[in-house]
Amino acid sequence: MCWLAQIALCIRVNSVRDSLLPTFIMEGRRGEGNVEGEVWKKEGQMKTWNKQGAGVRMVQYRLVYFNLRGRGEPVRWVLTAADQQFEDVRYNKETEWPFKKQEMPYGKVPVLYVDDKPLCQSVAICRYLGHAHGMVVEDPWEIALGDEVADAVHDLLPLAAQIVYAKVANDTEKAKMLATEFYTSTLPPVMRELDRRLEGKEWFCGKKMTWVDVFTACYLSQLSAHHEGSLEAVPNLKALVDKVVKLPQIEKWIKERPDTPM
Image (cartoon, rainbow, N blue to C red; front, side, top):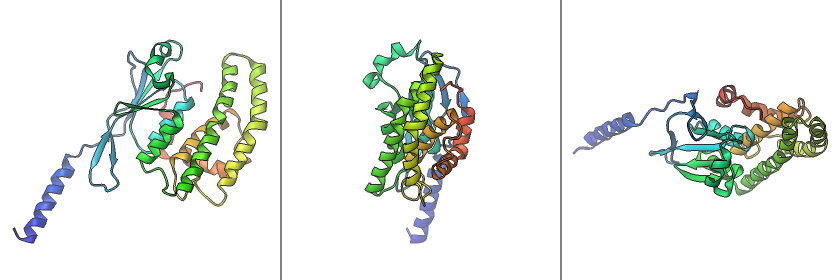
């Protein structure tokens, strides 16, 4: 076969291969629920190209958490920012969780099932998704600094959650006391340091958005929603949070996600 004929054959084979690749539609809707928790699902399978772009590997994500934002929300944001579809299984904490707890590794959620393989701990899950979908940098030092930021932000969650729990319990005095301590003593030094890390930079790690930026923006946007103006004194950090929140896919997620108290 002459070389021109070989080229023509390769073109035909590649065209047929490409035509057989499935088409994926990012379409979100509220599920009608099932016997194992309320489901809000982005339907379909996910596609992730390998580094060479030579083929496609199908991945299915199923996130299990409560019908709350909490520790599950950063995972949802990272999946959404990476344009990955996922099944969002939400257990009722009072009526369903007591029966499901024993099925979960460590007896805790969130758990992300990756092709039915469980991965636990929200920071580890977000870090994995960052690596799986190109939301990381290559420099080991920059990676370590990003991990440091994520851990520092994650450490705020238990303290902030106590305020919410006190409000839910209608313990106004306790909620007020905890909020005063958190927003005047605990939060400011963390915010100042994060703001300092962003001096002259758009993102925490290198020159592109990573999972750390999405993770941080998710938590801090929730904190600022409970305490208006908490980002005003940290303009670099506020700019980062605003950029992430205004991503089209994140805006869409916030608009369409289930309405929960926290």
